[in-house]
Length: 209
Ligand code: ACO
Image (cartoon, rainbow, N blue to C red; front, side, top):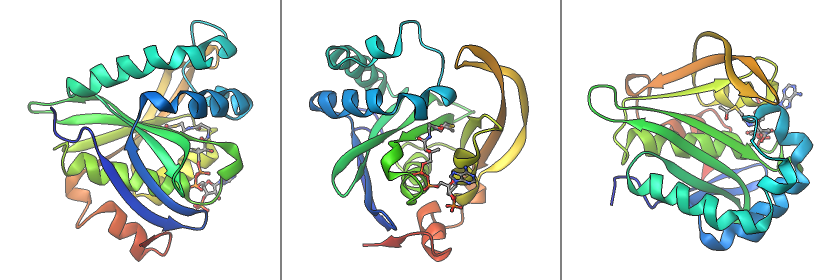
């Protein structure tokens, strides 16, 4: 077992309801596949280019393989792959990846949330809970994220939780068929007096249950 996995985090209350995070499960297959297929247009412009067509990559039969490789990475302490739940229903994912220990103690964070629950504070609350987990049980010093400058909603999420802009990475990642510029944002533990979730609650964007 590695620190921070498996985990159950939250809940935080936001406009949309109760937001919590939990480890992914094998039985998430149906919900995952349905949301990923329904939300293709919403997700595809912002996600790494896949090697096979969207429909094929998100067929329900693919989940056991996807899930077991994520779980294997989690058990090695390289990743923390979580489901985002709104009022107990699977509505997105939050992933902490490339966890590096030693003198760096850093990782990246990424997320998606189904379109029909967008704009209700779900991703903001999920990222706050995820960051506190990284700086707490996972034992990280720094968490970074990369976002396309055009991704206004995701930039709002990152800014809501207190990420700091570090620069522009030219042609950084193969997203939606081309290498795209990404903004690099980061946060180190020194920038979090108390917790990110507490700060979010103090700012009025969420409340403890
Ligand atoms: N213009 C301006 N602001 C916008 C727009 C827009 N077109 N759309 C949304 N917003 C703002 C909202 O007003 C809100 O800001 P506020 O809290 O200051 O009012 C913010 O964007 C959204 O905040 P949340 O409600 O917490 O986020 P939500 O649950 O809607 O999820 C997310 C946002 C994750 C970006 C979702 O839209 C999504 O999954 N998009 C597709 C995948 C994606 O882009 N993932 C992120 C990739 S980058 C990364 O992972 C680091």
